[in-house]
Length: 444
Image (cartoon, rainbow, N blue to C red; front, side):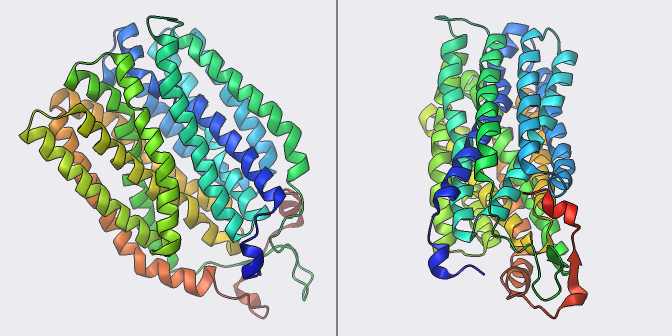
């Protein structure tokens, strides 16, 4: 086990692993959310309704969510470094293919493949962290990787309007090529550096008493009750995080009459808030709510309050673009906090089972179940019932997320105490499962 002193020491190689994986996740976001960032402009250029074009985003989220489960299972079997390389290469190819897009069926097909490509990235990253980093380094890396996604989002919201605006007017297709170039550059860096940094795993790979490799402990049955409610919480988190984020430019443009380019730039505040939210909620979890599921419950409660305030401001008054934007940004920031708790921290509790990548993929898939549903449903609500009704549904979704997490809190606390943080029991042979030597070798 890691000593308290060692746990607070950030090794040089841990920093390198964190940086490399952060760049991979940065490139992933550049090549995955670029279409969503420009969707208001694409709607205008192609003379399409929001609900029509939302099918493209829905295809990506369904493929990404489904792929998370498949990639999670594969991530426990094959070399994570290779999976990251393949995922980045395929994503870059899809962004290049999007340059030639002329109709929705073509875009749906390409973006569906793109979604699966990106699903090959997160589970291997979690496995790399669990294999090569101690607890302190894992927390450090989880926050930094999340920053990578936020920085990518900031850059896209700032740069895309300049590239597709009246000045340069490169067209959204050309922006896809630029994003592919970023992905290719990061891929080349990853291929070069990964063999140098993915060395000396710190997880136990051999039992000194039996000589067996990679001894894994069976999960207690009761934990799956908590997992089900955590999955529901993640679904509601994904619905709010992506559902709100994708349609904020349209909300600002339609409600306050600003241009599509200005609406896209205005929403950069979402990503800026999210950067701080990862640090703030990570600190809150370490200092106040060490049970990450309880911390997620508190964040959902805060989101419910914020959505309620936003609803009454927009229904009882003429509304303010600045106030509405700040409140929506805070809601999205809260969902990033929930994401950090339930997808960033929860999977590491399964490390003794030897299925970290599998559970990481399954849990992350739930985000995109919610996102796939909300991206289409929120667009439909906005078109048919207006934005006030749409905002009201955000209150309901936040409240449902709160209830889901509260149900899981006690069970999860018991699981962490009795399983995840319990000392190893060398005599407990009946509850252990042995992974094959081939699986152990796959992480080296």
